[in-house]
Image (cartoon, rainbow, N blue to C red; front, side, top):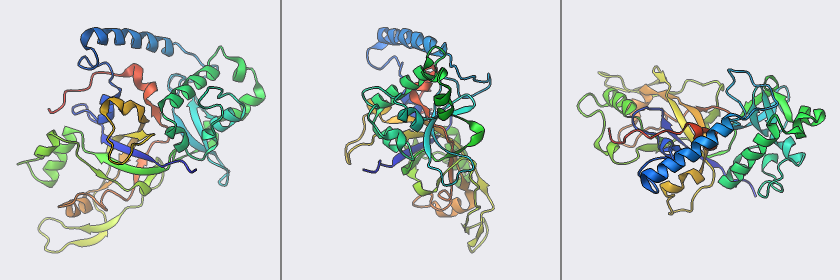
Length: 340
């Protein structure tokens, strides 16, 4: 059947109040699963793993300033530039190349128990792959690090296969990597909450009391999530300037942006059965950078009493490459203290 659409959950980037995914991959907290002794053992294991992985080298030349060494290997979807009718193809990024995962799969290089017979990399989005869950994600990452490593000849020494699988970034057009089934935007940064509160409510109560006790968020428009670089059309809507007796209709005069981090979710949950926070890493595939475009004049007039609508739903840009939680683990840190 058709792969299920993936939801996106987003949070403003903030050093103060943790974005929920931030806590998900900060796995070495002293108060979880065994206290200080377990934490020290986890730290030793993680440090050893990180040092080993960080020493990995690829036969693909990776510029020193590249975001895509063999330790990263984000996932995305591309089409060959100049082929508008060409099929979208899943890929990972290595240096200045996109590794065509459909070609890798067709060559039989995904030979693990979960992916060897799976058609997930012959789809036009990553949804089927994401739906397979963390064991398949880890198998894919391990396979890719193996076949791209400097000591592995299967791609390195096969010129025809190498040329078929490795596509120069200059020859690719990046596409939206998933079909977005749901999109929730969370209000997690205390700085952002205070700034918005001052703008919309004044200095008396810039942060509502509920913000300190529950996740504050709203559902966005999944159909208007677009890939970074797509042109933005200035929205038209109603505004109501201070001192004006009548609202006006026209192009937004206060078009704004918000830099956020978005978590891409793979396997979902059954209706009415919440996901335990201890199991969150089994559901979150990875992260992208997101721009929550906002028409502040439209937003200010429409938000009371039910929240944002047209001022927030006209466009939401996301970066094309999804960085996995496994790639981020060596850089995990303690989550900031909540409620401050």
